[in-house]
Image 1 (spheres, each protein chain N blue to C red):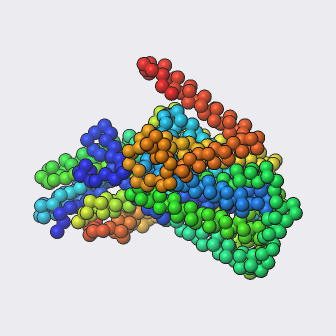
Image 2: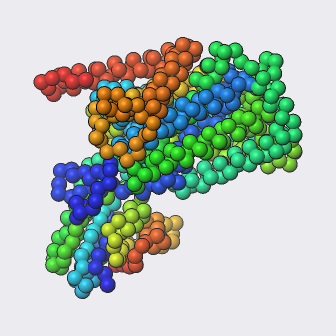
Image 3: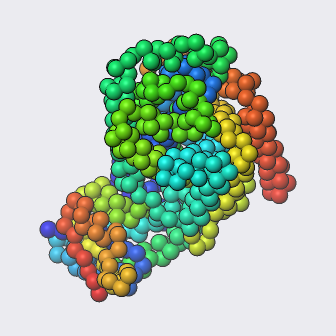
Length: 487
Length: 137
């Protein structure tokens, strides 16, 4: 019987209606988790580097390093949370367990915004990379139209429920990491070591170092590079031995991502000036890694790496767009099954067995977000800021939830328990989570203050969501004539 | 030799005969039969999504299988598994339960005009931790 199997932390056996058991088959291991997580975090270097350079200029590597520290706090908090609560929903689940349904909804709604922005920005940056093969794709209007087409295509195949191979994902990620390492090594050997003063000039030379305000804003925008930590947590429920493998995947991601991002940003600023790197029209802001390949000091190397980077970047960004779509549809189902949003969002197509309403609505919103791209080519930095707005908000909730669970449920099994704790009132609070909540919230405030687009669009999204939630709860209350109105 | 036999069932014509064969094999060694029906969940949904129609279908398949096993006076346990893919779910179940045999019933299927085993059967043949017998009616 399934009852005889020893249950691991987080294992669930559903017992619906009849006597049969539904037994969830968890088959994902560290390579699959890492490739999914890296696909999301690692893909952001293909667009974020340019957006950060647009603001932080020569201080781009510094901004990335500062954001990288926040990323470590986030990854560690998600490692504890994911191992402790291995269910789909990520920060929304942590917040639901840590606080209540309403806070869980707010975290989930912020996460939805970040998924929609991921889809839009990843899709938008595919055509500039592919413009190596067809230059017309670099035209802003064509770029936007193709990006909309990509989202439309992914919407269709996900409604139909086409299968995705984990093995192909792992293969692409491995090739991508190998290519990035090669670019970093070649850049260091052929550009940086030949004349290290170029990097110093490009970072600290006249007109290259940003103002303090821009540096702070650059650090805030650089958080864009590290927002994909949610992905691993979303896969927690289908991970074999989540208690061990989720923290392992996060630690591996921290090491690989930080090393590669440091290398790529240093090589980028060795190969070109920050102004060229951050120029969305005549420079490489929309396809910064292609800029590195195009500036390698050998025609043969350029001929090899330019098409290779184009194909790999397009494939990893395509995967990231799809990951955003899958993430939002799973999250929507999760929220609707916990009665945090109307059930209609989680409705499953009778034939294709996919949440077609959620997929269609959120793809429609992502396509709508791309409309300014027809006239304003650097609007994608606004999209980036919107992505950061949503992501940082849910990271702040994740940290706060982990801290609250330490206070309210200290004996909850924590297979991966964060170290470096401060003891308050006989409870232990991890320093990294405390720093995490402070830094993510601080950076989020910078985005709100400095970025008008994300301030208004993000705030409108959040308030719109809260309104939908309240209305939904009121309607449910009057429909069911419950004794107590519960938010 | 075959004390623990895993029989994945999918609602095909081969299910009943396969279960009967598994029961006969198990009886020889005073063994036991496990029948599993795998509900596949698309990646756009969380793995614990409950798709009522699919669960109902899986349970009906297992009910029929239980009836056939009781006709053979055979000890059988049934389980519904929810997974992303059928092949890895079967192999993982066999590993987890320490099965001594996987007995799979297959129906005659064609793909692009050629006989095809589908995707699950080759995966199980390649990755199974124990012997596998294919039974085609």
